[in-house]
Image 1 (cartoon, helix red, strand yellow):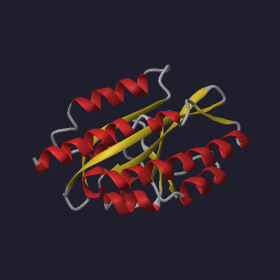
Image 2 (cartoon, rainbow, N blue to C red):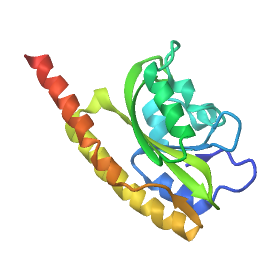
Image 3 (cartoon, rainbow, N blue to C red):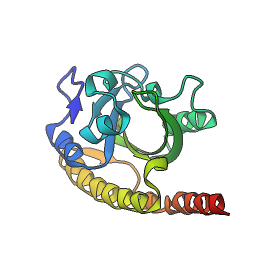
Length: 186
């Protein structure tokens, strides 16, 4: 995982877990102005086409199209602002470095250190390119990554708020996408 590490606070063990993931992952520091990305893994740079150098230090909005992401942007802001919400899933229109648009299934989870939310971990999946089977593989890989991250976070005194059970609810998104695909064949 590539890090924007201004103060040396980002634990190496956390980076190791995220770096080993085959899922596109990013880490934003909510303590910094505009919550910039402070970590992205190789899968993120491969999926988006942006190098770590281009992504780090920027808010993830840079992936949105020129006109913005629409209503989902406000839902994401509401999630970040609501201390009672620990995890969220969002379908976000994004644009790759080469200008190609893509639909991004984003799973966000807040990371807490010493009773303060310090990071938001994001996992991304390019929906349109892969379809339902790949979505299920993404969920399986992400669940394992979350389990691994919880173990390391606990050792570092960090807490991942919420549970990975919410990931299972994304089956409704998969079902809706399959239904949309089916309707396209009618």
